[in-house]
Length: 560
Image (tube, rainbow, N blue to C red):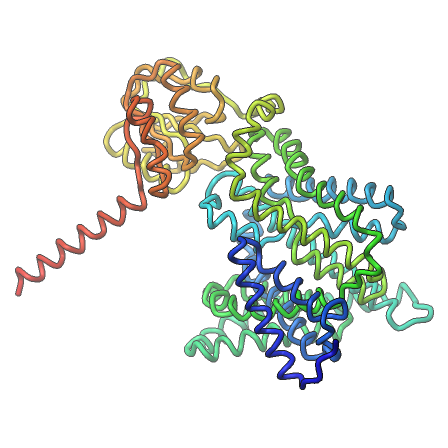
């Protein structure tokens, strides 16, 4: 039943409902995106029909999308783009092409026409950066190998989706006016306007924006207002030029990404982004026409299962060909096994320019709801799932093309597994104590930095899988003084420690943890002496810092 209230009262009521449903979703450990779409369904024509005139909500939604794309561009500085590397590029493009091809075939089998099948296939290839970063960060997996691979892949996906949006808006600009269009003239117009825009932004990045930001950033409030104005202004400019607000907002963020204020701007606008985006998802839910999408439910279920199950399989195949362990490919694939908020923005864009109808928008939205909900449960349990599937993953394992064996004639004082931040510093300290170190790295494309001459002379590097029970047999474990694993995963460390003991290691074996829960996990292994000690770098660093501060405090007191 329609509710006769003014725009302010309706908006306030919707916000109260959104806060209530979001609280329930949070308690159920579901992403808030789902809650906001459900709110849209409740307040839309399918539910209570509270939203008759949605101009205000749609305006907030458009601003939210612009801020989201602005912050995505803000994270893609030139140096980061250069450092994405062959692994992220190969996995990202490979996953997009294979997923799109299979999704296109599935859509055709269910009776979609060629254009609708192509749009759906593209939409299901992109994963949610927000959800992946949130869930991996909550479970301390961002710094692990599969987390780093997933983040690199997401960067590639973000760039590709921007390119797709540019193409779509170019198509839309040529078809929205109706009648015949001179394709050559339209292409020339797009080329000239786009080129002029890029040149202007390039000049701003080089000579104008750094100077201007130095003066704007003297006030936090001014920096926030100026950043929003810059993002919305460039988005409006690209809209006038025939592109989309998404493209302009992304370019506005990219223009600021190489400045020293990007983290400050990102932190300041993240809350505004999250608030405004809820209107996009509410409007999307309100626009759902369940009468039109009822026939698409079987296809939505099949596509959702393909995303949840097929994505890890695709990633295992791609990454195994590149020499990565099958377990890493599975974990990276499980992390990205959902479709993105960008997929929903993309499908809404295709509807706006007349490429698809309500039933396709509803189809992709249903797939998003199912996969985001499923992913929110799968990612927290990904390590346990991988352990259960270990026999199958081992059968899928290919030999690492960079797998090497150490020089059996060299005597090492220590073997260190992993060359992350803690591992690299630990190696430097061991070399400083006069130790000769064997570094074992399981990322086959890792760039191990041994530029220091002292390190290069006293550190050798081999590549291999720490979880492989056979790999420790190739290492000179009988004569070393210490073995240290800087890999934070408890399951990996326990498998590794048992394999090292089986290979004849009698020296102390130390493992690394990041949480107290992980430290408790090793209690049984410490008792049976499989593992000798547990290193807790974060806690130890805090203890050292506190000791230093107390010593300074006593020194000041003595001086007084």
